[in-house]
Length: 122
Image (tube, rainbow, N blue to C red; front, side, top):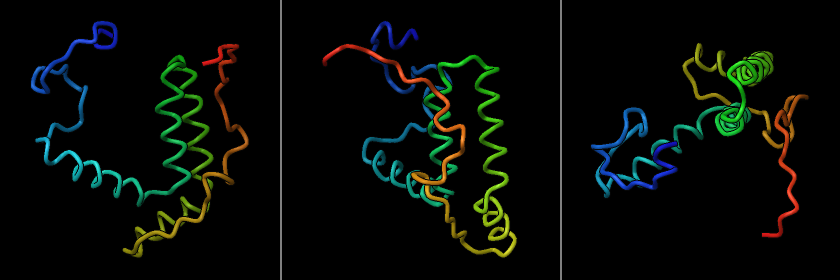
């Protein structure tokens, strides 16, 4: 919150611990970002989508509420064909073929957050 409230500009070497996962020279920023994007793209799409939403949406929940949602997501994905495919492909030493569609195969508790309603006309 200090960084958001003050708007302070600082060097990567002065950043608070844990703020960044990587610090790379300017010319390596795009290659590193693409490397990470390729790695994420190899994961189960539905799982990646749920994880992304949990990171964003659960930040505003109590730890107990966030834990309950994470547990529901884990339970849902553990019973999915994509989970079985992930384990099977690992055991067979081959690339997985995930089938779940993150736009169709969402859990019945999706979405778990409440959207803010505003009358603003931005």
